[in-house]
Every structure is written in structure tokens, then in C-alpha cells.
Length: 184
Image (cartoon, rainbow, N blue to C red; front, side, top):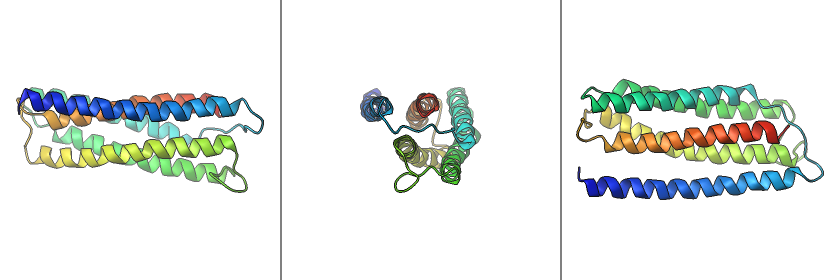
């Protein structure tokens, strides 16, 4: 794979991630502004969001190991598949977290909704949409990995999916901590 293609792919990924970052910066800024106004209710963070945090951190660690393995000439398949499984578990935990919110009487819109619960749903859903994009990339990378398409000289796919997934990981940890303290 040419260095030029590697550089272009990475640059485009970084530009896309900068756009995603700006989107979430806008949402978190809106939370800060709105939370200072009347009608902001306290919410206990669903336990499932804690589980999802652990899952996405572990999945990032598996992708770090996958990259190390492919650089050594070993198959990264088991680690990429593990990251994919944990990514799917992350999505499951998000849905269970929303179920827990509704069981607590916290809704996105309508009766029982409030600005804090609405923002919590919007931010977690928007992040999950970006995770779904990462899951698609992880599926493709898993298939290519199982087909032994990656070598110690050609592992751009693993590198790109790792960069994006680590970005989603750091973004989620930021959002989780931010929400943990802003919806209180």
C-alpha cells in the first residue's frame, strides 16, 4: 500500500473526527447553557452506561493488541473479533440504559420528559450512531482479518479502524463523565 494513500486516508479520518468532535462540543455546550436555567432535573446515571463504558475501553485495548500482533506478523483476528463483540455489547448496554431511564420515568419527549433527560437521550443516541459506523468498519476489518488480508507490511485497515474506535472511546469517556456530573 502506498504511503500517499495511507496519509490521505488518515488525513480524511482526522478531518471527519474533528467534525464529530465539533458536533459533540456543540451539544455539551448546549447542556451547560440549558442546565443553568429553570427546570433542569437530576438523573441517576443508568448502571448500563457504566457497563458500556467498560466495554468500549476494553474493546480499544483489544485493538491496540491487534495492531501489535499484526506488526509482529501474527494474526490479529481474535482481537479484532473481540473488539467487535465488545462494540456490539456497548450498543446493547446503551439500549438497556435507555430502558432503565424509561423505567425511572425519564423520557426523551412528552410527559415525564425534562431537558436533562432529553439531552441525555440525544447525546447517547448521537454517540451510538457514530459507534454503528465504527461497528460496520470493525465488521469489514474482521472479515479481512479472517481472510488474512493484513500483514506486517499492510495493515492500514486495522490502523484506521483503531484510530476511529479509540476516538469513539475517548469521546464516550468524556461524554459519560460530562453527563455524570451535568445531569446531577
